[in-house]
Image: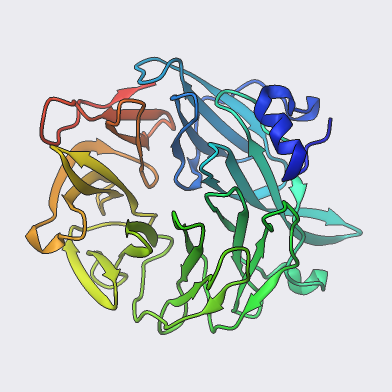
Length: 375
């Protein structure tokens, strides 16, 4: 059957009947070229972690053999023809949503659209790629749009954000009934790639977009409605470094690398918070984890020398100190973070050979990572 996002098709796919023959995995290249944008290490409903990476013409996937590891299966290769960027987001239902900027040649000219696919269960194939169109109706102007990113609200509605050809922000969202709404334009100037959406536990979605002069902040006033502009944030993130994390109910802390100093900064409730460190371009990975009974925020980034560095602090108490720990491991792309089936922090990164390496919290008290292993 052909899978379309939303409604009964999703429920049927969640029972394991939603794959299509055209999207079955093929022979896997062993070398990843780059990470997938977004949280590319995620925990499925069956308790297994899955990691995703890019090749020039598709997607690589590794999946834990059983909850908590240590063995993994993969990589398995999924073709993503003509897709030149790829981002991922996960909903509370465990589904992994992929969006990509797809360019095809038609009648001698390039035509760009946004392609969307879903993995419904750990270790299962992807659905077919489904077109979400382009926020620009004119095909010539449509080639100048940016790269899409995705967020999934707790209720399952999907939100796709991208830079419009005019420098404003474009968003396309699913309604609560599973129907895709038309593209919405949000006024702004000089919006750039590296947009950071956050799905809140309340069911609302907000987003911070790098732009000229200041980052553009937009939010949902209530569930199942369009987004509106809020007060801009005077920050200048380095390319694709911006990430957001809900650190208290309805309150998001944004993290990024400063373009001028390479230091890691945070913003919350109108205040910029220096965190130290020295990061290269690429998303800052962030999550919350309970360590010794206390709520902590864990971050990971790729340092200017390519080394993976992990930081930890009590959530929303950065003034007490952000503790940085170089791992001694080097990565070709921004790392990812997730909690495994046992609640342990797991760091994933790509080594110089394009292979996946995993470092897992030891679980012996405090915060310490075991040596990384290649899977």
